[in-house]
Image 1 (cartoon, rainbow, N blue to C red):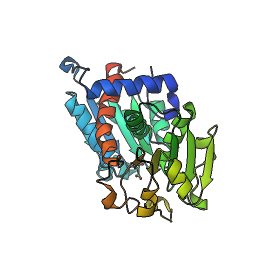
Image 2 (cartoon, rainbow, N blue to C red; image 1 turned 90 degrees about the horizontal axis):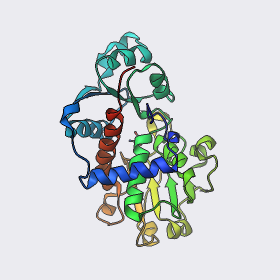
Image 3 (tube, helix red, strand yellow; image 1 turned 45 degrees about the vertical axis):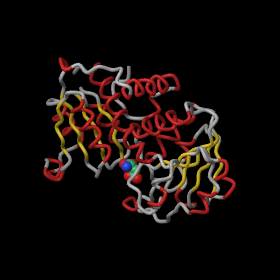
Image 4 (cartoon, rainbow, N blue to C red; image 1 turned 180 degrees about the vertical axis):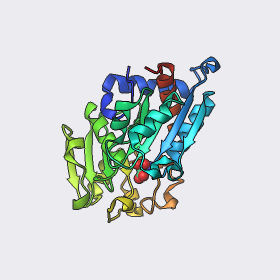
Amino acid sequence: MIKHLVSIDQYDKKSLHNFLKSVSSEKYGFRYQDFTTKKQIATLFYEPSTRTSASFHSAATQLGHTVLPINEVNYSSVTKGETLEDTIKTIASYVDLIVLRHGEKGAAQRAAEVSPVPIINAGDGIGEHPTQTLLDLYTIWEKFGKIDNLTITMMGDLKNGRTIHSLLQSLKHYNVKINLISPDNLTAPFKYANGINISLSLILTKNICQQTDVLYMTRVQKERGSVGNYELTKDNVSNFKKNMIVMHPFPRLNEIPTWFDTDSRAKYFKQITNGLLVRKSLLRSFLDNASKN
Ligand code: ASP
């Protein structure tokens, strides 16, 4: 049993598969609520968030738990210079689990080292975003019934996009063909793509469009100093397979024009819906096993 969720690397192929199945059970209502074990979680966000914080909050309350939301760290002792470790130890004495988003890579690991309650990494700077990957994998699996033997193309700021880092690492368990498209200065760090069979490209070519089953687009992370951009064009779309899907972790800037939203291949709103199911499933497994030590 995993105590903290810091990196997607903590999941092997079997545990990923078991998790995806548990999300299906969540979707079809096979899992019952247990109001006798009411718990409290904290959402501690040092960086902005819409979907991750709201879906964890919603998931927890739908399961009958309560939430201590700390999104305005500017009004906390953090501005007085308190360390992450002291903040975590403090919050952990009030709640049963902490969902943490932080601007520094490695922050979730630091928190896990001192926390008596489970830490769930909701994004650590340019590091990882494992719960996003779980919902991304679920969205792919739901559509194709498998992850093996697909061609997955990731495009955008692959250097600073933490959703890309976690997704790439998870795909090493599958037999997939991967295309990575980014400007030269925004390529994925080798560490995350290690052991994966990939092709690199600077542009989304006709050939890549024709082969791709999953196109995963990301924005350029301006707040992390990135520049450059890609935009989906009607010409790209005319070369797509009928059965492929387009994904995006959001927020989108202008990577995917809104005219594509009504195309049945657009799955980015589906990802958002799946995010709630995934986080409910995660909270069940972590809170059922949560005990302070
Ligand atoms: N929402 C995602 C994240 O927190 C993607 C992004 O911000 O571009 O990493």
